[in-house]
Length: 431
Figure (cartoon, rainbow, N blue to C red):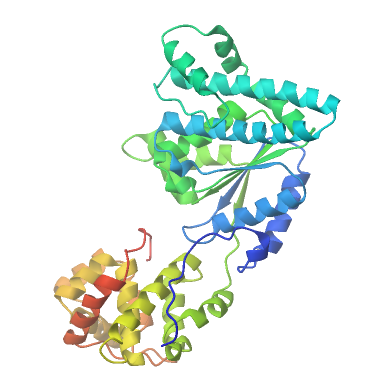
């Protein structure tokens, strides 16, 4: 079968690793980010799960750093609590600035060192002010490396007391931070990348967005936020609408916050095909037009979903080969069942109990008749399944898909796929 490898879905880290054709698009966007004069600016990188938002932003980060544009990266999904996440955001930004200023001060001339020392003093005051504000709300502030341990202790002791200096700096945080960014960038701009907002809890995601406005919203910054637009709209809708999400208000919230929505360019399916064909085992399956039609119909050009499918199919083929080398027919059946498990897990469970349902769906599609009884109910509860099975039907012209498997074949393959098929994909509208 050839060497079996598991494919990761790690993000591209730099321009030289670009396999998706993002570089040209990223260069155009970076030119706009660098040239915009009316700051602050908030850009939303919109795209569904698995389409390469992190990879695209990493390429932008690499391009901007090559131009000596100051950049900072923040991953909010590492922090669970609302109080923790806004504080982590602020301290991450301040820590990155402080570390870079220290390096510049050490390497600069005397006048430059004095100037950087003044900015560092302000940065540390802002860090203390943020920690003071958190200490008023929780007993465990994060410091991000700027605030010393003894300062944390002091703020803990002063939890119920008044710290006038810190309070003053909280009230002037936006203005002071604006001055810091101006000095730090020498009148330029700071680009802050915020990744994986849609992996956060709804409250945490909205807390990050609100914090950008409340604390950092006056500085010469460009905020680049990667998100699934629908997920964040629903999060804002729940925040504003209570138990019943108000999607209209959620969209309005996002429209006010995002100055420029940038919809991630899709990965051409032909490019994904060229990358992945050599990864499929056995090699005899890699050239199957039916397999690639299944992948295209089910997963489109979503790199993460395609990689996960290929991993599951390769492991399934290797497991079946422990007994006898599986035929292309059997592997296509395995691929269709794996797709059902990934995209329609409820239907996959029904199929395990009632293996004949696949054949009944196929016959109804061939005769263009309606499903009846329980099958009609299952069809209504699993929108998209009939469309998928129709796309891989043996009756479809132009392809050579096999007839549905027998009940015994379904039982064998579903038993193997329960082990090798991985987890179902995140919920998504496949209708």
